[in-house]
Image (cartoon, rainbow, N blue to C red):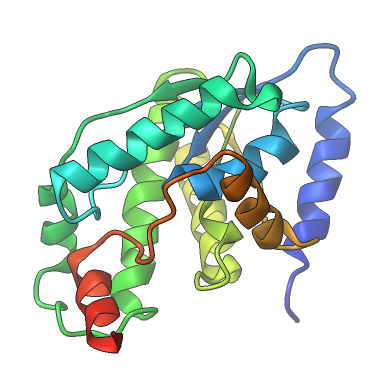
Length: 212
């Protein structure tokens, strides 16, 4: 039986809102467009720090362009007042080490699953080490990314870290629900955001070029 991750998310928000003080949330983000709707949804419930860990991005110029757009959006959007952004630095060697030997796998397969896992693990560990109450990712807003994989990875990371000591709570998500992806496109137009047409890695870039 498939889980309704959006309903689990709503139930978690109801519990969060019972607190007198907003809990802290580390939000892994891949770009400004995907962050837009997610911040619109979450900013009223959490004290948010956006974490831009994306070693999959193909080159440093693209990496810096996406982070600059993310920072600009945070500074301009009325609903993201007080949101902070962290750039852990460009480190593509992490991604290529993970992808070694699987360069020819199709998009959307095992390499992509491990890419989600790589980025979410680093984000979860940062959240743990810096005392955040919750962690999650913007990845589930994309219609091209599997929310079941993303939530399974998040659950596994929370469980693993809890067994080792303490862990932030994983905030379930399926941000594409309730027209979330559509709203992200509308916000991208409103704020004139740079909206890339590939996930960031060289493999998706080549696949996109082959379709042209």
